[in-house]
Length: 158
View 1 (cartoon, rainbow, N blue to C red):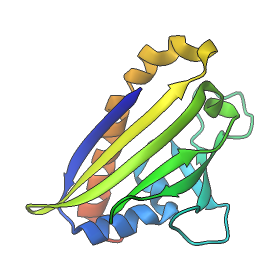
View 2 (cartoon, one colour):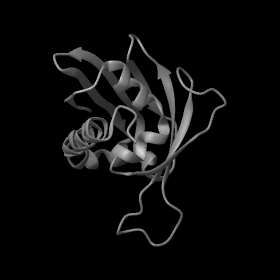
View 3 (cartoon, one colour):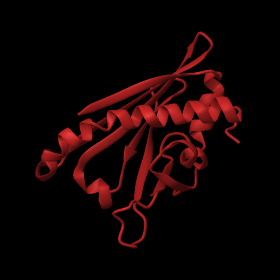
View 4 (cartoon, helix red, strand yellow):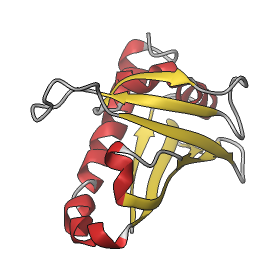
């Protein structure tokens, strides 16, 4: 399954990319992320590994918050990258594979940021496909949050 969205951000591609590359910014714009931490020694780029900690949901029963691990698989162009899910537990258990592709391109008055999520479900979870298809709106919402943070709070997101 392939889901995606894009947004125009009134900042330079370099500003947008620098903000995205800093995983400490994830909780500022991703509605499901409460925190993020580095798992690898390198500070970014290909093979950089990190994990996210989910925001508690109303359905949580007090257990530890969900964690998801990722690896930056590299990029095929400037201001672009592929981020692959490496976890197999929690919500990651539904997927055979999942990856997020980001690309920032110069546009009139700023940057056009594209985000595409490509994933395949494990057979026993294939019935979740219609529910996950509806997540396209969530991608759009996160990109709007990113736009708001970058435009209203400055290029560094502070």
